[in-house]
Image (cartoon, rainbow, N blue to C red):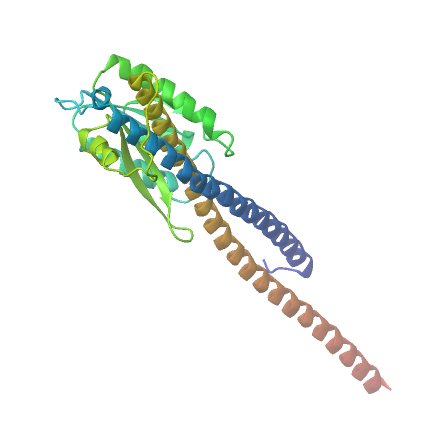
Length: 295
């Protein structure tokens, strides 16, 4: 059935409304990317301060470093945190990180337990056959990341008490240039000897050497807790930045497609309208000639 000018008007109006929604979502995604990337950059100075504190503890009190020694035996259990998305319009975002985590965990020795951040990635990991023990809600702002990290630390510590040598891995998407991202992984626990030696080699930025006051073991444990907090916070922020970058790219593609559709609809509308005008003119001319012939 051929379109009429009225039906084309409705299609053009609907497409224009949809384009307005898409452009609003583009603006929201771009704004979200900025706040998450800003939070990641702000963490750099905080992480540097924690790193210097750990350096001071490991350099001033070597016996205290034994609390984080590398286990002699392979870890008996593996705790994994996989950051995904709760919302749509992100393309293959959840599939990419879920497949990456599945392949990486399959190559690690030991029994694994997985916590998913996001319902969609939880479903994808369950379909892959991974043993899921928990589900967290994806934060919708920078302020909501801190409570999430606290919940993750409580859950992971509770299971770490049951398995002394449990390792803690984090899987998430990290943003690249433009709308690109890549899946990455990081082992947070246990803190091995190589990690400690790397911190011990960091030079103090001033000529005045630091001094650890009070209980060195307690200070070291507190700094390790901050190190874990920063690592989890950064992983979540980078995942959210990647999610919004993927959504922004999808909205840009949708905007281009709607723009092309509107151009096509406008062209069809003007062509149909011109055809109607031509037919009316032909009818007028034919009527005039018929009246002239009758005289």
